[in-house]
Image 1 (cartoon, rainbow, N blue to C red):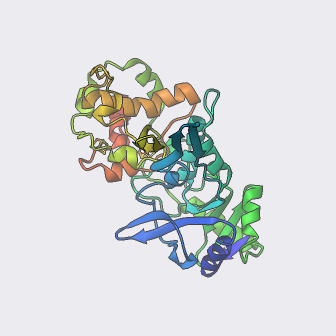
Image 2 (image 1 turned 120 degrees about the vertical axis):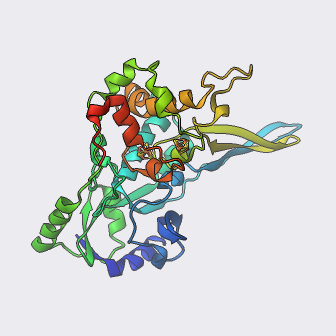
Image 3 (image 1 turned 60 degrees about the horizontal axis):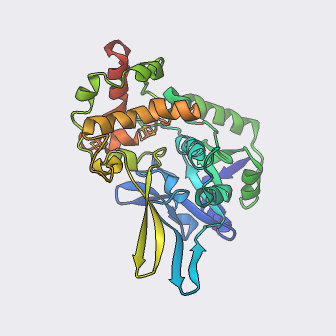
Length: 339
Ligand code: SF4
Ligand code: SF4
């Protein structure tokens, strides 16, 4: 199918009749995913958003339930968000990250109804990356600028219009709101050309990396590669696959609510015990944990690398710590292939 760029605002406006619509919106020098009030709020001219859209499914702060205690006992009111949502313009790497989060919130041991209800009711409309950024390395971690993992629709830019690939029934349903027409042979060829031209220049060699990490927990390399880190957690807060959280009660007398907030393994308090002992006492252990979690532990548990190569941790680190260089250092200098 084909949809013209001119028709996108109308498409988004008509989706708003049945869905809460999130789209990339310009904000100062950044692009952020936001709930839009008008289709014309969305920007089509962007690379990666500053913060990934994971917060739409797993909010940075979220009330799980409220409670009141009276003479009759405790009364809970659960706050499950079952609204229908569309995330329009999500990049393939961010859509893939949601497949990884699914492992965390839905597995043999735990099912998280807050995440899963949102997930079930959300349609992912992707726009492929015609011009990946120089910090992108999705192709090194089993992704790609036009990867369709988890997407319901994929839009491929061919100039003043998009070729739309319909990937699921959910996608087919939302496309009925669009003034879409059939793609011609020339349109399909143009889409194929766009895909071919989308070069991801940054390459990271992860061959054998897991085996190295299996055996180098105590390697002295962690001292040098973690040295610059100031523990600010910008990397984890901007990472689409990071999912650590803390749960607190906010209460006055007997009434209150239970709230889940994003947390980060880069903070010293994250693993501190009630006794005062901290098994990750310095930045070295915390940095090692972040790398191990993405490239070893997550593979051990879920058989998938917990990095989609979006490059945000590279762009947002205030001391220019580059995960590509960290991985090359672990691999050994001969493996360095960062462009
Ligand atoms: S580790 Fe860095 S490059 Fe990988 S998904 Fe997270 S933010 Fe993106
Ligand atoms: S963004 Fe950089 S300095 Fe901040 S915690 Fe992450 S690696 Fe360390």
